[in-house]
Length: 287
Image (cartoon, rainbow, N blue to C red):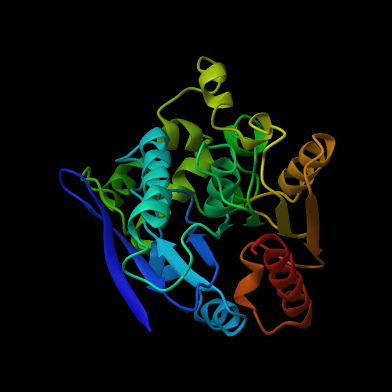
């Protein structure tokens, strides 16, 4: 059974979470959706994964956060901090799960966000990143995307109409063209963060998980398709190497032939095998 709650209100926006409570003092997975911080919503948690994790004894909390370009990354990160704070300090009287025993799982931009939350004061016990990334300063994201520039060029005239200037926490595929435009022009970092990669490098380092690893960073499991054309698999390889180098438990699972959002093909044997490892990893660290 799903229950939707409002965990935060801003001047003009309500931020909601969909809660799937298993009760019985169960561990909790916070899910962070993808969409390049420009589109997407909490509803993107796939039903197949809800069923999988529920069957294995986990409660799930899928949260919204405000979207860019109307809201910039520092405020989005604050939304995520507030979601974690709500879970730990304010959800206990509403549900039967154990709000102190939680991990975070995220996809794409949500995977990046999950990795970044490992560096915050209120940290998860474990992190699962699906085709996420740890670096906002590399050529892969600061330069025009070779992959996306194989597609028809998105014109600036008209694309601005896909975003309306009002803060929002739920964005449909109508906003995708704005993401595509940003990747084709190599301006995603500027549009999402409000900072310039060259001029504001030191500030942006604070938002790069590969530069936020300490000896108390949580254990991490990274999953990535070898043929990902949106987020290069090198992003997960670099994060895995950085974590291992810092003495943090980390493992990278690669999906042969897998592209971006490979987990949409949940019934594929390789994906099923990967998620069995996810389940084992989470049960090891949530106890």
